Image 1 (tube, rainbow, N blue to C red):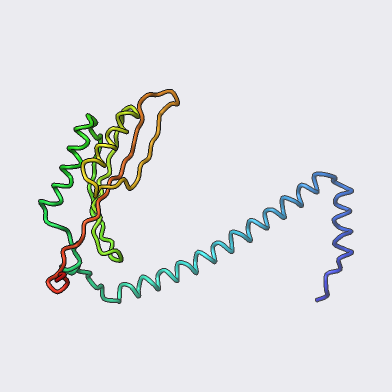
Image 2: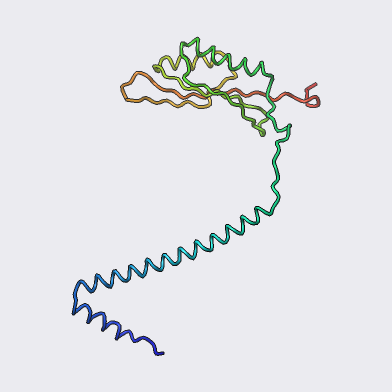
Length: 187
């Protein structure tokens, strides 16, 4: 079998163009695109087949391996202060807001353990919708109610530029020291 002579191929393409014109060019372009799509489809089918084989092998390995059931150790709990102290902080936050005549729309409380600093952070997240002067009074009342409270995040937005009401998403936090163990107490 001999090698393909490129001159004969060029001559055949030129003869087809001279006989049929732009229709021949469009037909050749369509054939090239169709061949490219068929090649792409064949490669995708091959890739899909290989992926299916790999996934079925992994699935068989997972079915054969024993499943370990994770259990949370009882000492993984947060070292929180007494329940009464936690609710006292929440009550101070709510009292400060009510003294400023602003009621939060939604309020969420959460606790986060900060291991490297050695304390637990209690955070209250709530949304206020009021004029800016009322929100400023509420912020002042919060800081005046307890010096250990700090504003961790404040996001303000208005629906329209001339709107007197401001929506404030406020995050107030307090750092609670973890209760010291018997050996860690100072003399």
